[in-house]
Image (tube, rainbow, N blue to C red; front, side, top):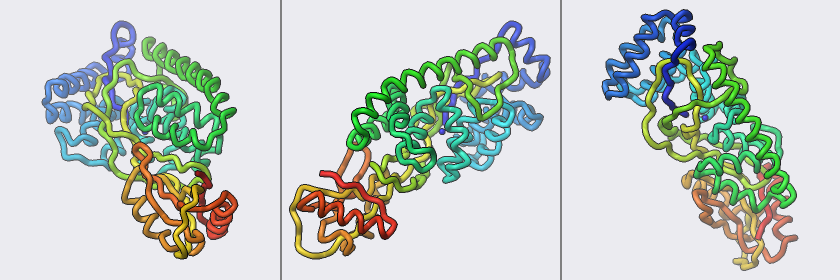
Amino acid sequence: MASSSLIRTLGGSAMAACLLAMGAPALADVKAGVDAWSAGDYATAVREWSGPAQAGDADAQFNLAQAYRLGRGVDADKAQAEALYAAAAAQGHVQASDNYGLMLFEDGRREAAMPYIEAAAGRGDPRAQYLLGVAHFNGDLAEKDWPRAYALLTLANNSGLPQARAAMAQMDEFVPLADRQQAQVLAQQIKSEADANRARQLAAIDLGGAPVAVPTATAPARAAAPVPAATRPVEVARADSAGADYTLPEGRGQPVPAATRATPVPGKPAAQAAPVTASIPASASARMSGEWKLQLGAFGNSGNADRLTSRLTGNAALGGARVEQEAAGRLTKVMAVGYPSRDAAEAACSALKRGGQDCLVTR
């Protein structure tokens, strides 16, 4: 789940309330850090934020986390960035909460990340909608719910998230038409709820209200700049369906930290990951040329596809089918091909599932 955004400076009564809460010197230091960052003086920005961050100012903690995440003004330190995001998130800083959840996810702590991802999806973050949609599709990190999965991917795709389009194309092969039609209605409901969440949080910020507890449904920010992309792959649990991929696209641009009460924004790419690992045995008998196939896996990382291909090639349970790779947008599918009939493909798939490997019959 790393969105980076401008944290706007509050004005009027909100500023007064903020000054009373945190003290003018601390706010001045945070604002001075933002000005320095905007001017490209990252070292000065870090110095300005360090004191307020140590004193517990959530905005300073978030901004300093951004610096450690990017390695600007300080050496890049993912652990320190995560600790600062966590500290700010615990105080209700929504942007920090979003980034913290995405860092947990990309580091493989997916179950711990899901409450943050669900909260971010509830306020309309397309990255979180994508990840939650894939989870509902695969049924691994969330309850299997294909209409909701397709609805969330529809919203992420409408927001321009490139990976969502590829995932939807894959889902189209497996999600029944009735579920896809239901998803269109559900997508509008989810969007309306997210818009309401955003409006509530913006109103609270304008009134100088206290931060909303995290992770819960809150709202996104007014100005945002994407945070750097996560590059570490996160393996995804197998699914008995299409094997949707959790990989998110690289982020563009650089984040500009902000100075006062935070509000979230879509932006940061999250974990790159290998999706469904469906497996099926194959026998090394005669070459077959039928049109029925088994999908064994779909991966955003070609190395994972190569490993699965190598592992399954020659597996007797595949019944003589060839193991091949097929490109599907940004994904690489691993397929067992050549079955002469659906019955033959289903028999091989059943054999694989008895051995603990998932698979999907297709043509």
